[in-house]
Image (cartoon, rainbow, N blue to C red):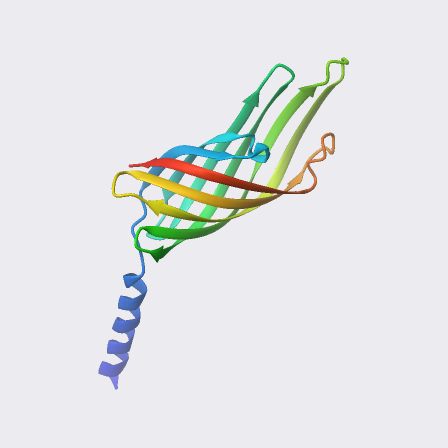
Length: 163
């Protein structure tokens, strides 16, 4: 009976590790999305285990009447889909701030925090390049100057160098 239990545990362990994939220790690049992420974001991913990682994104904008930043942190779980395709899901949040001048002498400034989810698909090339497409719903909580207190949907294409 003990041998049967040991064989069953070994089989379950082998099956669990058979579907595990190696994710890169580090990846850095750009996440190109809509204006909810302030456009292009510098994105960094750090592996925390064989199938989970931390992603940190920094987006900023600077213009004649507008400037701001948005910092996002996400904890992600990664699963192999097929071959070099993976899919991932994550949770996290962040903070941001912006200021806007409407040329009438009125300056608006807002600082906000937000909670975020993340789900996406990625392809790991044979060269150290990772490309991804993800969907990130966010709900913001701010000073209500610029209506940050709503649900936003951010869709983006990510291109990262792995090392």
